[in-house]
Picture 1 (cartoon, one colour):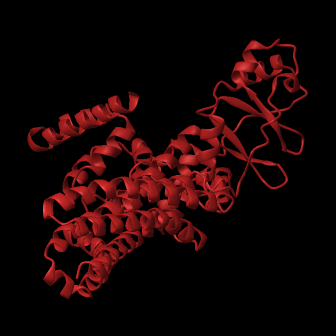
Picture 2 (cartoon, rainbow, N blue to C red; picture 1 turned 180 degrees about the vertical axis):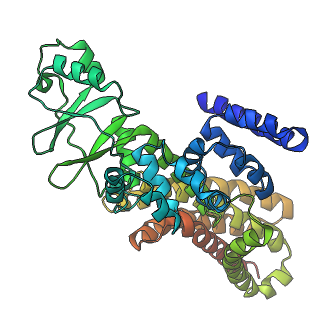
Picture 3 (spheres, rainbow, N blue to C red; picture 1 turned 135 degrees about the horizontal axis):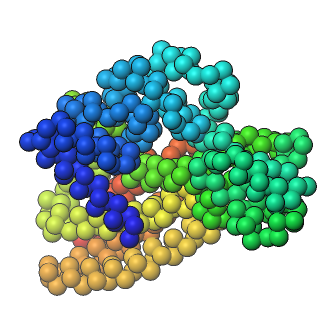
Length: 452
């Protein structure tokens, strides 16, 4: 429900901005943008062409630019950096938290990166340089350095007085990290436990000692799965020896989940989720040409299979009419299985431990669906073309293709994952090739043997 409301608000802001760009004044545009959340402004910028984007960017105050730059996709961000004054960019970094600052530094090109780093204090620069050492797609790259730590041997009353003296806490703080004198994580103390327990109780009596931290090498995808499964809002990040390095919060994880969803959708069409939707025509055309070329090769392969049976098609025209049914049904069946397996691999629900069980299950599903729909199609074809033999041939070919499609839909992503190739990117093309070629080969081959 909240997602629907947010989408409606973003559409409304985009509509207002488009209207003001056409007939409004710069003051009206500025007032609207200044009253919007950075997330909404980022959405608007991604939804405009380059000229309109520049008009909006010129009215955004420097202290908000940083928050927007870390929310737009990479390609839009790079285009905005090209039109940003260097002094404004340095100001844009001043109000960012350490994790947001690290995200921004990851996309800054040289010499901008050096200039921004030079403008910082030595302490802050040293802290951020340490986070830039880690891959941005790992827990170390995601973590924030803004943490609150306490010791287990102090009372809760001392902790409360310490927090009051600090006056502020890092954003998204739901618990305090308990460490020993060597900064090794011993557990976490939730703010709710801090408030409801006896003030004279020790931290060790109220903390959750099961939380030991996330290894800094853990992949971002695994971090997101852990947060989802354990319903976490934040978690400490640790070295191999358990020493605290930083923490990851739910807002970072939400970003990972969204990026992963975007990637899954876009990669199946050979596109990059970080591309600018309103990039120049020739730029977009060149990117898509590669994927179209790959698909053309697979289409020629399917055509070659059909060409092997040209004589059969000349004698029985009905085969040409029914061929798309075999290929289409196989493609849908395979895509269903492929989608489930790719999702299972992403969520770590599928591995070598249960791969054989999954293949047997999908083989069985293919048989059941194949027999069911082959019967329906065979009856319809027999009546339509007054040929029982044609109906039976079509039905048998359909069973073969649906079974093969189910096995291919499960097997292809497993093999690609084993080879280190992203199944979401390459699986669809390979599956289409398999289902088309096997479907045509089975149908036309059976027709050649039994109908001529």
